[in-house]
Amino acid sequence: MSRFLAAALLFSAGVAWAQSFPSRPVRIMAWSAGTFPDLVARRMAERLAPRWGQPVVVENRAGAAGILAAEAAAQAPADGHTLAWGDPVGWHMYLRQAEAGKASTAPAALVPVSLVVDVPMVLFVGAQVPARSLRELVELSKRDTLFYATPGQLSIHHLTFGLLASRTGLRMQHVPYKGMAQIATDVASGQVAAGLSGLGSIAGFLKEGRIRALAWSGSARFAALPDVPTFAEAGVPDFVVGIQGGFFAHKATPRELIERLARDLGEAARAPEVVELVTRAGAIAVGSTPEEFARAAQKDIERFSEVPRGN
Image (cartoon, rainbow, N blue to C red; front, side, top):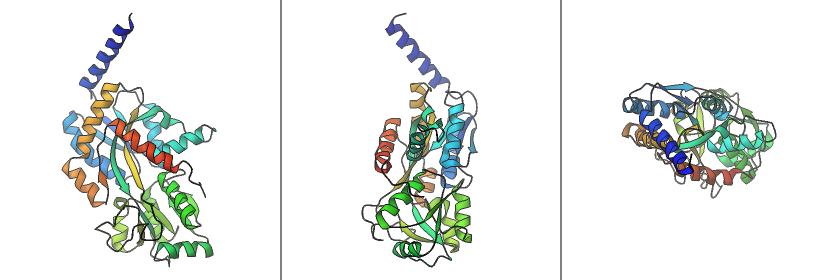
């Protein structure tokens, strides 16, 4: 068989995959229930189900900063029917650990499909913590033993705390959790002192006054949090950080199907009801191509690669 004929057959097979998709329900592996990624995935599923003519089921795989979601997608057939919400920065750091035999290799089996959201984060503490500014939290951490929580070792939340510590002298001990819902609850109850999160996962706790926002990682103040300074205003210049969240699929998925998925996911991410949900959380709805997602991820990976891991 000539190379030309082989390529033509592969292309035809890929087109057929894309045209016949989906042939059964589509599963989205999200993080813990009630968190911002979960809410966005469910809102998008409502838009995708009628478009695809199949149920779109969101399954929560909490823990290990999304690695459990990655494992579920990596073990599924490469036919586009299983997608995973992913944090490419954290996953990249996990793969670096995996090279030393210390972590899951599941993210290596996945490829980016569409960047859905760019999410600035809130640095927050429990209402019982006496610090009312980042500067006061830094000073408090030098006097007392304080703990902070993240959705997992090497998550972007963990890496951002490491970057913040290197820039400010913040001294806190890390406690990995399975998801933001439990983190917000435990910060509010005083089990741990602080956390970092997109606004969508902690808005209720802020409204109730159970936690206090100290700084916002966006480039400008968020209108819904007018009294919360940016990190630059809080004394940390050039500290604009966002969670690049989006969907991944098995790397063996035919290219034509990846492109079909990216188009459909991108349109769903830009649907008015999804944009409204995302905007309320101070985030930006994107809906990118696979190439755009890969470039955005690489930019952040380079930024965080040399961040001290800390505790």
